[in-house]
Amino acid sequence: MSTWKTPQRIWLTGATSGIGEALARKLIAQGHHVVLSARNAEALEALCQGHPHAYPLPLDISDRAAVLKAGDALRERLGALDLALFNAGTCEYLDAQQFDMDLVERVLNLIYSAPCTASKLPCPCYAKRVKRVYLPG
Ligand SMILES: NC(=O)c1ccc[n+]([C@@H]2O[C@H](COP(=O)([O-])OP(=O)(O)OC[C@H]3O[C@@H](n4cnc5c(N)ncnc54)[C@H](OP(=O)(O)O)[C@@H]3O)[C@@H](O)[C@H]2O)c1
Image 1 (cartoon, rainbow, N blue to C red):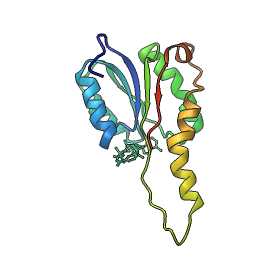
Image 2 (image 1 turned 45 degrees about the horizontal axis):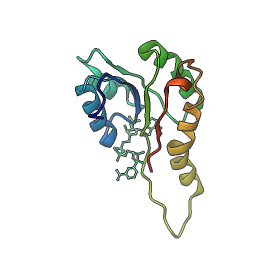
Image 3 (image 1 turned 90 degrees about the vertical axis):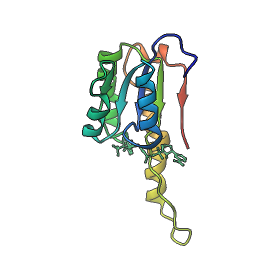
Image 4 (image 1 turned 90 degrees about the horizontal axis):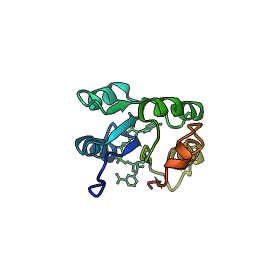
């Protein structure tokens, strides 16, 4: 991050707490143009407040239609994306005695399926510009 010489246009999910929030604050402080997503709209507003190049985009990343719709907002705010950071996710622990496939599907959907959906965003500049996608977990 510190090697970028010009402001990058970045979409970061999971920006309201933990690693994502810390990253959001750092990117904003470095002058990058960021769209921040998570479900908690109030927390996103608070993060972006007073920062003209930070935009809240509340959404549930497990909602495929909402993720696809995000393309319009991203294009409107940033024009094109240089980097997408799919950090949103949850931590749920499996009970070894009672394997819960619903839990597994929930966790994997957030970490892997949602970013794959997002890679299909109908934003003309997106496919050309995004060269790096980071999948946590
Ligand atoms: N911390 C670790 O040790 C660790 C280890 C391995 C992997 N990870 C992964 O790294 C990522 C960040 O971890 P963390 O500890 O910083 O997590 P965290 O503090 O729990 O933050 C998770 C973030 O994801 C957002 N989020 C959760 N479900 C969402 C959904 N359905 N749609 C949109 N946003 C959603 C949350 O915001 P809202 O509640 O506002 O939606 C929050 O901003 C996660 O994907 C986690 O699984 C963490």
